[in-house]
Length: 361
Image (cartoon, rainbow, N blue to C red; front, top):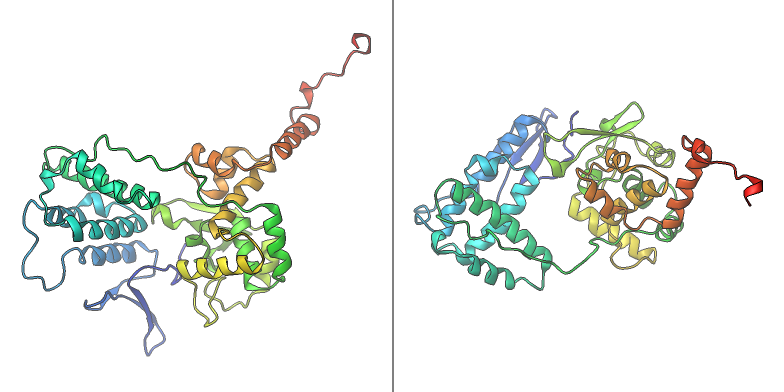
C-alpha cells in the first residue's frame, strides 16, 4: 500500500519537475538539497530520510567534533547508532529535538559525571510541564541505556529515577452532546463534518487521518498503517461507516488526500489540529476539544456498543489492553449494562436465563 505524497515529514519538500514527475527532497536550513528515492512511506524513502536526519547530528561545517566524554559527544554517538536508527521516525524526531535542547544546556559537561540526583534536579525544572518532563526522562533513559551498553558510562544515571505526573485523564474525550453540537453547527458536505466523520468513524490519530486518501480504500475499508508505529506497523483494515461513506462520496475525485487546505494541498498535522480546534470552538464546545478527544470518543462508542477490548483494538490499533481500558473509561455504565443484558436475552447467553418457578415466589 502506498502512502503517496501525503505523509507530512519534517524537512521534506515536494516538487514537480518539467516532465510532470513528482520528486521529494530533504531540505534542512543551511544544508544541501538531498534527493529522496521512491514515495513517502516506502522502505527506500524512509531509510534515506532517516540517514538525512542522522546527518544533522553534527553541525555542517563545524571545525571539530564535540569533545570526547561530553554529553554532546554521547548524543552524537547515539544518533549514529543502530539503537537510535531502529526507532520509528516519529520517536526519532521527538528524541532528537529533546536531546538537542538538552545538549544546548548540558552538552559540555562530562557524561560519566551525571548521577541520578542530577537527573532529578533537571526534571524538577520542568515540573510545571509534566508532559515535557516525562518525555525528557524517556529520551534520557534511551540515551543512557545505549551509553551503558557500550561502556561509555559506568552507571546509567536514569536508573531508578521516576517521574510521577499529576493524575490526569489526558485529552478530553468528546461526549455525544459535543458531537451533536458540532454536527448541528457544520453542515453535511463541509470539510469540518468530513474531519469529524474521519476521526470518529476510524478512531485514528490526527497523524493518520491527514494522510488518508482514496488510495487507502480497499474492498469497502480504509487501510491504515499507523504513523506512530513506524513503517513496519501492520496495516489496519477499517470498514467504512455509512455516514463516513456519504461524506467521502461528496468529495472531488482528484483530491490527493481527503482533507485538503483552502489552497488545495494536504493538511499538516499541526495545521489540521489548529483548524479543527477552531471549528470546535465555533461550535460552542469547550476549549480543550481536540482531534484526539474524538479518538477516545470512538473507543467509548465501541465499548458502549458491546464490543470486546480486542474488537476495539482491531479498530483503534492500540497494542495493549491497558490503553484500551484507559480510552474507554468514560463509557456509560448504564449503556454497557443494557448491552450486556441484551446479549443474555437475544444473544448467545440466552441459555443462562432460567424462567422463575411460580411456586417459589
